Amino acid sequence: MTTRPVRTRRPRASWWALVVDLAFVLVFVLIGRSSHAEALDPLGVLTTTWPFAVGLVVGWASVLGVGWPPAGPRAGLVVWVSTVVVGVLLRVASGQGIEPSFVVVTAVVLGVLLVGWRLVAGLVGRRRGSGRSA
Image (cartoon, rainbow, N blue to C red):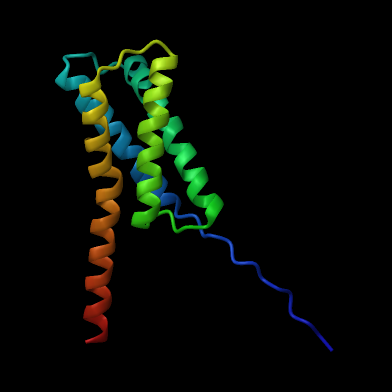
């Protein structure tokens, strides 16, 4: 008698979603630096980006750890909160300045970007799915 190996269901990481998230964090940084007349030199951009990139990775690790689809809106909420909280804390710890208004703008903009694209992708996916079955 042959037995089949039991397959454990692992979350299939959507690495493209990570790339989208990182791109949106970079867009946030570039817009912020531009709007404050800060240079867009590579070192300056990296200095501003790294705290939020670390926060993003922490959020992704959390999402993958619980097995949620990374491109889903629920995952987007975790990634967003982690990116903002860890990013702001690391900025403070590294001596980069923060103001309350910066925290508010950061939370709103990253929320729109990191959760927003997932909501739009979900709506587009549903529309395409409903179009096929009709």
